[in-house]
Length: 367
Image 1 (cartoon, rainbow, N blue to C red):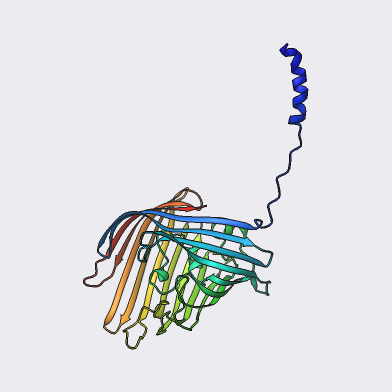
Image 2 (image 1 turned 180 degrees about the vertical axis):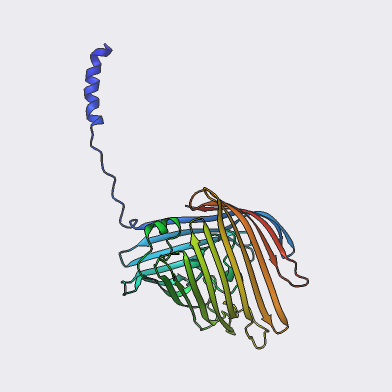
């Protein structure tokens, strides 16, 4: 009986299995050109900060980066900055604020200037985002001059960025860096409120910031660059104290090795806090230096890194020196994600103010 019905069942099954494959529905136009990237810093810290014992698991930072291509000329970007409120009314709450919200306009090549574009809105400022493409350890903490309060990474304004000449070859971009890969370097200049992305405008002054990066011997050492970045403006307070600096940086990037050296001279901080007194509101002159190294010690993906920062603030009452030493070991889980163990020692060099000593285990997830 079973054998009698088997041919009939087989004939009925053939049309089912021979159905043509239905093509996937096209992506709705509102989602075409849409990309979403995520980055989280999840940590455990133990030590002493400002004399207080620190022993906690925490969310150091979280970013969700959403980009939408409108056409060949225009695109938009919005980046959420997720952090824990440690001072405000919602102390302890995980809060979301915006870091970037901008319109990007691609510009035509103009001779030597390639891949130029403008950003308008909550923008990338010329230096910090560029530096973070060289120093891949934002997971440990902010970059040298941002950590010292001299500058911010984003602000409300407009910025022009471009690269010099054609791009370096695909192999260099794949194995070392694809950030601003102009053969002869790149540049950026911005006009912004000056108070950073997390502050209201407290005066009517605007700040100019700039960066120029040169690859002097790109044929032999494409990873070697010389940089200058600067600002001129007023601190973001009603009294508008002076805020300006000039910084020189030398950097070298290769597969498995990154080295940087920084020096700067300036006066005041972008938030207007570095003043001699609350009578004349004269800015405090400052100078500093920083050195950073990242070395691959084991393939695949085990790196040893270190940093030294030094800031001198020249008050009328005497110079104040602050120093920071950072050392750590990074294990790359993927090309973009890593597990980091580090020690951060901050020496205030001030009587009555204890030094900070902090051990940390932190995971950076990039999706």
